[in-house]
Each structure stands twice: as structure tokens, then as C-alpha cells.
Amino acid sequence: MNAIISMCHFCELHGPRILFCTQPFRPQEPRNELDAEDSESSYPRRVKSPSLSADSHNVTPSLPSMKNDMCEGCYSVQPGYVSHDEEAHVSYVSTQHPYHPQVFSRIRQACIRSLSCEVCPGREGPIFFGDEQYGYVLSYTFYVEDSQARGLQRSYSIVIVMMDKIYLLNSWPFLVPHLKTLKENLQARAHKVYTEEQAKCPQTTLRLNPSINPANFIQQRGGNKPARSLVELTGHKNVFKVLHFSFIWILKACGNRMTETLLEGPPTEDSIIDMEKQEETEEGFIKLYSRKISENQPEQVASEDEGCIDSDVEQEYMSKAPFIKDLRLFRKALGNSKFHTLAHHVLIGNQVIISGAEKSQVKAILAALKMLLPKGCCRAITYSNTYEESWRCNFLGLALNVPLPNHTMSTEMFILVEVLKGEGEEAPDSSLESEKSLTDNCFSSFNYRLSSPVQLPEKAPTVLQKMEMALRNENLSEEVVEQCFICIKEEWMNKVKVLFKFTKAGGSRSKEDTEKLFKVVSAQEEDKQLLKFWMTGLSVQYRTHILASSKSQH
Image 1 (cartoon, one colour):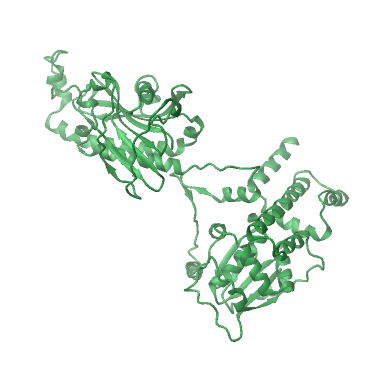
Image 2 (cartoon, helix red, strand yellow):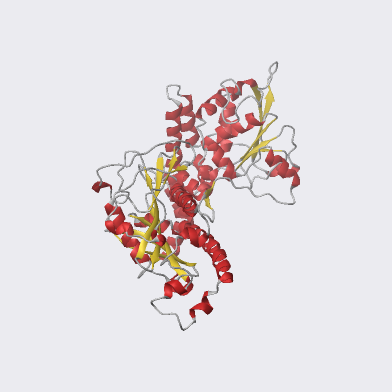
């Protein structure tokens, strides 16, 4: 996160003052984090450890004279702390003040405004302000109890300054709760010290004494210091080191939660589906794995531990590597005719059941077959000891010899692929091979038996014909074939979008109008079942947009 985070306080003698600040430095970057063009030199950096480690740095910045006019309450650390993040190639520097004069000017401006005019109702809480010249600021103002201060409390603020207004506003839900946690920790420590001091010398009774006047107020209130440091107020001698690590975590975590992606065109349906599957936690992080287990399904819990996972987790597993090579190998092992039949079932949405004793083999087959479909159409359970209904998944991995229910055999649209050990050959040892990629001869080491109660049309969908043509062409590399599949799927998903808008958002349509639309999008009779199934894979974002715009027009 390209920002500076600072702790500020209001001194009774010097007014608003910067107390402590942390800023990131990256290789070949100027010191000025807020205005890189105005800096001519860069801060020396060292990378020591893959984890964050703190140490003091013996470089004393040249400070304006006003910074040197400090009381004990305005002082924090000298020279400061430096932490190195080798993995991200970032060094975090915490000092009393920023090194660069222009950066100091902007942080100073934010400090003054956060402790004077820019305050939220109640004078404690977050507020946003700023402009293009001095940067944008998220300020969290709060009070810390001090038995020797006027009003028995001192005013502090934590300010985050950066030039990117949109980024800072989008980070508000993440930053504010963590700043609140940090200030509550400081307040709790200060309250403990305050309670102990009040027990020894109650200030309320003492200050009602008529002998106290402006000349002897400081001496009479319990000390001769105009302000006390945060170390003394909290009773924690390493409070600034704790702040150093806290500020580092906030900057690093806030930067990691948002990423930029260079798009060469509009996002595809698959990329939109991926974004919709991401679930953000209360802390602002993205939850990658999510699985709900029902209490009344003890047997299913055991099977999930062995590899049965829901579609969200499976999608993450499947998206880590291309499986075109496995798809080609599986096609050769299965044979052209059997593969054509199986792929036809996959493309029109019939449930595909892969039954086998080797879990890794079953998972590899499912991973390869999923390359044929858009991500929104894939609902997979990779391995289970019980049959799962087709409404839950259209890709199902089953342990060998698991019986199918009678109603499934008679009414369901499915194809069963039994993975059997080849004669005279032993199946590969799943404990020695990776579950994500298999050796070249792994598919040919098994025999495959296909069975289905469904009678398929004689002519295959156009999509299948194009995909088989790409797979047969040995002159095309796996990367090229993968891109061909992406283009084919996106082309037909665009046709699905047209059909969805025509049928769902355009009101009642006659059969003749629908047939005319099929001709316009170059869809044949054999493609209708595929288009109908692929319509279920449209993103929620697109569906909501089309239906909402349709309602507004009517």
C-alpha cells in the first residue's frame, strides 16, 4: 500500500505534533512516497529475512528547527525502526518524522487538521478529508487518559495519507476496524495506569483546591512536566515498537487485499464467475476455501476429508494449471468414439459419473473434462463414497462399486465411466504421484467402460466438433489449444447471453421468432440443448443487470 501512516498528538505547549510515522520503501523508488517526481535520492535498503524483522537504523535525518523543539510528550523514537520484507521486496521505516521535507509538510498538514478542525461528531472516530495538492487522509481521532493533563485526557490521532483517493475510500471498511482495535489497546493500557495514579493521588479533589492558580498549575497537578510521553501514559516501554509492527501489518494487509489486473478487453464470463466466487471476510480478506458440513451427515464428513469437496474449492483446485495435455492423453486412452460420446454428455449438461478405486485418477479425469465447459456450468464433487444427485453436481467422482439408486438408473440423464485396472498392469501408486498432474502413460494404464441410459442425437453440437478438431491437430501446442477452447467457449457464451436476453428479458416470444434468432447467431438444431444448459452458467452479475434493465423498461 503506497501510503504513510502516522501517530499524532496535541501538545499543551507546541500544539499538534507528529509523534511517529511508518512508510514503505521499495527498490529503485525515491524517498518521497507521495510525490516521486520531486525526490532525487532513495533510502538505503537491506533485505535480511523472508519474514519481517525490526532493527534500528543509524541514519539521522536533517530536520527543520521546529522539529527539534520538542518536549517529552512530543518525543517518540530516535533514530527509529526498519523492517525488511524479502518476499515483497519492501522495507518499512518508522521514525519520529518523515525524511523528505515535502512529505513532512503533507503529514504535518494532515496532523494539524486531524487534531483541530477535521473531527467527527463526539471528537472520537474516523473521518476522511484531503485534496489533490496535500493528499487524502483517513484520520482516526481518540483520547488517552492522563491524570496530569488538562481535562485528565490527551488528544491523539492516527492518520493515513496517500494520493489515491479511490483506493483509500475503498479501503475504509478494512482500515477503520483495525485502527479502532489499535486505539482501544492503547486506551486500555493508559486506563490501567490512570486508575493506579488516581488511587494514589486523586486529581479531581486536588484541582478543586482554591490555592491552585495558572502560575502553579503544573506543579500542583502532580508533576512539573507539560506533557508526558506515550510510553509513560501506557506503562509500556516498547509501545512504539508495537506501533511499528501494527502499522506495518496494516499497510501490508491493506495492500494485499486489492490487486490490479491488466485487461486486454472486457472480462470474460469465466473471470466474472471467479470474482463472484470470492468471499470477503469481515477483516477484508478473501476467503479462498469454504466448506459447510451438515451435522446430520456424519458419513459425508468422512468422505470430504478424503477428498470430496464442493464446487468453490474444486474450482480453486482446477484453476491452478491447464489440463489440455491430460485431456489429449485421456482422449487417446479412451478412443475417439468413446471420447466423442462422453464429451457430448458433458457439453449438454448430463451428469458425468467417474467411478474408480484410484482417487488421483478420478480427479485427473474430472479436471480434464471440466476444460470443455465454462466455469459457471461446472459443479463438481471430485470423490465421494455415496452418490450425489445431479442437481448438486454435474461432475461426480465415486469410489469403485458404489451402487447408483434405482430412481437414478431409470430417470436421470447421466453417463457412467468405470475406471478399471488394465489386464496385467498395476495401477499407479497414488501415494507416489501428484494428484494434480499425472504421467503421460497414466491414462493408458486403465480400461474404461461407458454406460448410459440416454440416447444422444446423431449430430454433435458445433462446439464439440470445433474442440475435437483442435485436439486432433498435433501441430498445436497445449497453450494454443487452451486458448482455442477459451475463444470457443466465450463465443458461445455470447450467443447464450443473446438468447437469455431474448427469452428472459424480452417478454413472451413465439417459436418462429426464436428460430429466427437461432439463425442470426448461427446456431443449429443440435446446438439448442447446449445453449439451454450453458445458460445456467451465466454470472449473477449479468443476470441481475439484464433482468433489472428489463423491469425499468416496462
